[in-house]
Image (cartoon, rainbow, N blue to C red; front, side):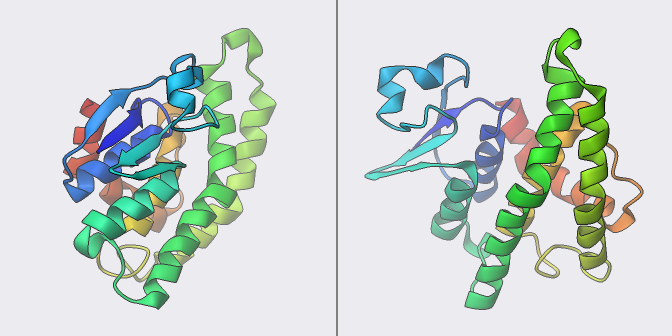
Length: 199
């Protein structure tokens, strides 16, 4: 199995998933600036983005799809065993992409990644305000449960935490949402994430 990407990108979510399931894989360093546009890589992911996964004859792109596959194929209890919880795992995965990710990217871009003269503090403020509603939804959901689907960490938690933890690069603080903050700390404190970051 080969996983293409670098930890300082969305690929870290799939590196984290590969480490969580304990599958044997080769990380092929592929940077989103330059490497991902080379002809050889475009044969794997014609979108020219990272990550991508090659597992025998299967070629996948999009980090969340890769993660759902890794969990279902290799993750045992990490992937829900019944249809209702599987649907909930997909629900929270998609929710993270639609409700959390875009705002987090704006915050990270305008606080850390862009050159200082290109940063727009108003976009940071706007994105932070936009996150208040979904963070309140998440906080309420976690009031009486440890993880998204109940008492056990699953791929739903990894995927959503992967989207939300992007804000850590920019010092985005969610401590006012006590349940969500506790949950995120439990997710990001897993040894598998430390191994992924060490890559």
